[in-house]
Image (cartoon, rainbow, N blue to C red; front, side):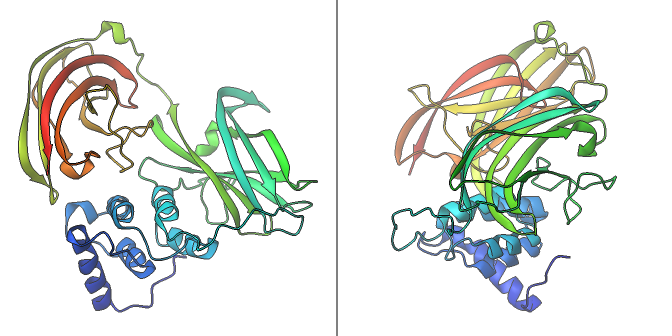
Amino acid sequence: MRRKLTITALSALILFSFWQLTVNVSAQQKLTLAMVLTGLQTKGSTPETATLAKRNVFIQRRVENYGVTFRLSPDIENELRNAGATTALIEAIRENGPAATTTPTPRITTGSKPSATFKDIWIDSGVTEGGQNGMRVHVKFTAYGMKNLDAYLAIYFMDEDGNYLKDNNDKLKSSAGDVAVYKDLRPIYSPQNYDDYTVFMPYSELDLPNGNWNLTMDVKLIYQAGGLIQQLTTKVFNYKKGKTVTRNPASVSFTVTRVWIDYNVTEGGRRGMRVHVNFEVTGLKDTDAMVIARVQKEDGSYLKSSTGGFSNDAGELRLKYDIKPGFDTAVFKDATLFLPYSELSISRGKWNLKLDIDLNYEDEELIKHMQFYEFEFDRP
């Protein structure tokens, strides 16, 4: 059951309204824990704060811009997650909190507080164990201070909005009712290296309907008695269930008629530019796809972003416009993609930039490159 904040409704609105103004305040104004918790639980009046998922993105953006006044402890992390915080927001808080006043020399002993160092993760898809089809997750890490400690390697699963998947059949689940898979862990040394610790997850236990799903694993070490030891990492992956469209990018063709930009427009309270693409496409009837635009600098490198909705798996800034053509040949006279100026991670001055516009399937697998479009941007 989610804990309620001991704060009046009037105070919550005041705090949240004040916090929305921080976008125009000095970067020295950091967010308090009360501001973050209130922001998560208070539905805003703007489109970008109307849902919990959007509020997470809204808060994350301000955490990255201004920082927070508190350090992330296991208790605070649990409180934030109970309030609806996503893993992306938790990591932003972890990275933008106050630094420790000193940096002590690491001293690992059998009596040290349990911890771990994450090294790598990879997935074998479409494998079979015990007659079940699923995926085998491999995790590489080092455990410290965990000699003879009963623990689990735990993996939870989130949808693309950062919401944890809920269990439907009481098989693989957490105490909170989320889909989760566990593997016993009891190191006999400290430190102890795990070069390939594997966990099998049957696809059927994701409890999802047919479709193409972009999911995220949340990988942690936890005590068997309950409680977090340490989060190791998150891993994005795609899962397809049921009948899927046979993909043949070679059969897809298109013609781009025109690309143009409207500058200094406002969407959702954010100022930016609106990119327009006029094109015709053949071979994608009844197929979920998207037009994607990434931003390149003159040296060919792509601008980066960590903002939900504006970032791909590689951490590149990208805009997207969803399409599902209803005809063998479909004409899109004005596919629009909005780019807030605040997402352009460049310094002051004039920049010669380029839009790399691609046609992709709904899970962002490339179909074909469409066009480059050069433009100039003056960062004041």
